[in-house]
Length: 234
Ligand SMILES: Nc1ncnc2c1ncn2[C@@H]1O[C@H](COP(=O)(O)OP(=O)(O)OP(=O)(O)O)[C@@H](O)[C@H]1O
Ligand SMILES: [Mg+2]
Image (cartoon, rainbow, N blue to C red; front, side, top):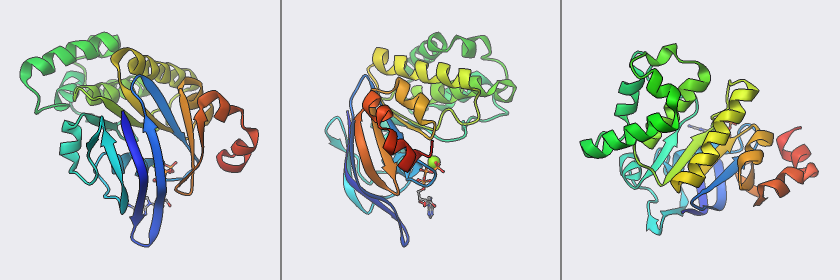
């Protein structure tokens, strides 16, 4: 379980997150939705150790990871799939995957690699092909697969649906939900695509200008029409 308590983040004079608290249980997808600039990426980047918080705390299974270095946080088994499918185009699918979890023992990594190929068969089929030959949806699977190579307990995804066709978005998000439920993962999903995200998530959290303005069961959040108009613009 990932627990975030009263997290406040500033970029110089700009307050990007203000007293954000939320919990991400294992086997569940928790979706954070909100408009441009709401602070969604800041939230993930702060948990991942890429941005230092002003105050507040972050715990994983009771262990305090607040302010730790990014590489220590990955070792604490929190993995981030950043926005924009950060795979290396010139490397093959397998080489990209092998870059994940480099510090882990060789046998453990080999076992995870086999699991990733089982989860995403298309990656196994294309293991020797360069990443830049993959379609957008396949590359997103590769980015998720690389994060899984770190054997995370908590997986964070920043807008995995960006630039993908609607059908592919649904496939990817359903894979993410299955992953949470079957691999005992706590998934924190950040999306501007609120409708699709709330369909696969268990819990929904609406972020606006750095503050949580609503949280609850995903279906309940999806049903709150006035929230959609006020914060999500549809
Ligand atoms: N490195 C930075 N330096 C200064 N301000 C920043 C920095 N990164 C983000 N911000 C500001 O912090 C706020 C939150 O940005 P953030 O990227 O977290 O939003 P977001 O919800 O991910 O938006 P989007 O949906 O566009 O990805 C915005 O006002 C943004 O301009
Ligand atoms: Mg963002």
